[in-house]
Length: 320
Image 1 (cartoon, one colour):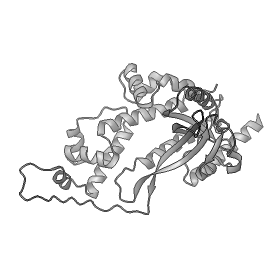
Image 2 (cartoon, one colour; image 1 turned 90 degrees about the vertical axis):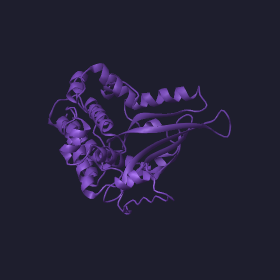
Image 3 (cartoon, helix red, strand yellow; image 1 turned 90 degrees about the horizontal axis):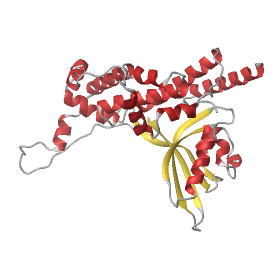
Image 4 (cartoon, helix red, strand yellow; image 1 turned 180 degrees about the horizontal axis):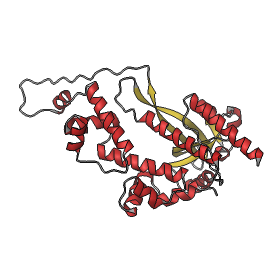
């Protein structure tokens, strides 16, 4: 028993070091115990997930840098799942030498139920020439830390028709501090003044100031801290923030790439997903606790967003 606790403490130590270096993609495996160690693991997992999401939610328009896509993990393999190529970042994340990955079976780097998910996928692609999908897989590092991600998986035919190639990719969003954003300028070239404003003219009038950005980010924070509460009308919400409805809607799309209400829904579902994965709260308590009025509405919205119902995620999250 003492040996198990020591191993668990070592994993917690490794994860804290990773978080100190700015890596928030590691997670700790849950156990069946209900002790202090499990509570610490739960809090660390939720903290890492919240920080990772917060870094992305700084927005597409910001004062310090640009959000850029970053390929974190990339595996190229044959139809049987034997790895033929891997990117260096994957080696670093998994703490495994490239020579120990190349030629190995992809499922050796997966954890728990992800192995079963991958095996079912391999069985499917043998019946189809081309397959393009996303799936949630949990990788496991050399020191036992978990790396859960939604992966993009695509297949293609090899030189021979019977051959299959598989590409698994994980893309994250990272902030590039080296490139500074410049204010956008909109120029309208016309021979005669138009009675009807063009799209460029509207954008020119709606150009966001730093104060506008501050207010809209404040609105985002209010939403994040009150997910269980229904929003007032956009007009009332805008007045609460000290702006108008047009700037609120326009600015939210510019900053976060989505509408106010869509952002609220996505955040409710993201929090629900995290609670399903990392706690034992029943699904009804989770649904009502994040603002859904009925279970059917919650289940439909969850499945539409993630591709599977919350009950299936709960089954996969529990130890087999």
